[in-house]
Amino acid sequence: MTKVLIATDKPFAAVAVQGIREIMEAAGFELALLEKYTEKAQLLDAVKDVDAIIIRSDIIDAEVLEAAKNLKIVVRAGAGYDNVDLDAATAHNVCVMNTPGQNANAVAELVFGMLVYSIRNHFNGTSGTELLTKKLGILAYGNVGRNVARIAKGFGMKVYAYDAFCPAAIIENDGVKALGSTEELFEKCQVVSLHIPATPETKNSINFDLMSKMPKGATIVNTARKEVVDEAGLVKMFEERPDFVYLTDIKPSNDAELAEKYGARYFGTPKKMGAQTAEANINAGIAAAKQIVEFIANGVRKYQVNK
Ligand code: 3PG
Image 1 (cartoon, rainbow, N blue to C red):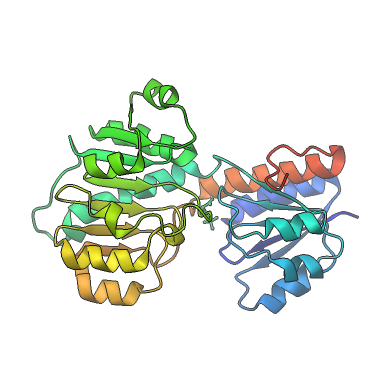
Image 2 (image 1 turned 30 degrees about the vertical axis):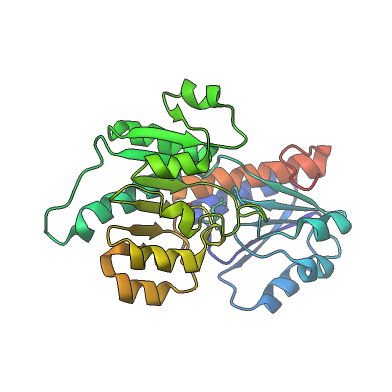
C-alpha cells in the first residue's frame, strides 16, 4: 500500500491534516504523521518506508533521501523549496514539487500586520503614522507580491514593483508602477517588501549599498527568506540610519542583539508565521495531497521543480 508521510516541524492546522487524511483514504493510501519533531533521527526513522512526503520548511537533504528507500515524491506545501536538496532528489529519482500560490494571501496579510504594528508604535498608545500615500516597493512580483499589491492599494499606498523575470506589462496591468531595477525600487520607496526566493544569486543581495539608497523613513519588511539580507549590512544600516526599521518573519542569526540594541526599530515574529493560517494550511496541504495522488496514480508531474 502506498504510504504518505506528513512531516511538519511546524504543524498544519488540524482541519488541514483531516482534509489530507480524507484524500489519502479515498485514494486507498496510508497516512502517517510526524509533527513537532525535535531530532533529525525522528525524521530519518519516519521516512524509511514511505512513498511520498508532504513537508513545509522541513529539511530534506541527501541523508534523508538516502534513508527513504521507497520515496518517489516530496511535495513542499508552500512556495519556497530551498529546504530540499534538489540535486540529491534527482539523483535518487525523487520528484520534488511545490504548491505555488496556495499560501500567498496569508503571507501578504502578515506584511501589513507587521507594518501597521510598527507604524502604530507597537500599540503603545503614542501617536504613530499611516500607510496612506506612502510609497511601497514590492521586490519580486510573484504570487505573494501580487497579493501585497492588492492589499496595499486598499490602504491607499502608491505601489511600485520590480521583478527581473515578470514583464512590466503584467505588473502595470494590476495598476502597479513597474520599475526598471532593484536599485530604482529602493531609491523610490520608503517601504520595501521582499518576495525574492533564496537562491545563490539572491543570497545577501539586500546589502548596505542597496538599503542605504532608501529615502527617509526607510522600512524593510521581510517575509521571504533571512538569507537574502546581508546581516552585516543590516547592522550598518541600523547604525548609520536612525530612521531605519526592519520587520521580519524570519529572524536573522543576530536577532537577540538587534532586538536589544535597536528596540522598536527591529521586530521579528517569535516563529515564522507568514503561512500559519488555517486557510493557507488547508490550501497548501490539500493541494500537496492531490498532487501526490495524481503523481502516484497517473504520473502527473505538474509543479515539479527538479526537472
Ligand atoms: C513558503 O515558502 O511557502 C513560506 O515561506 C511558508 O513556509 P512555511 O510553510 O514553513 O510556513
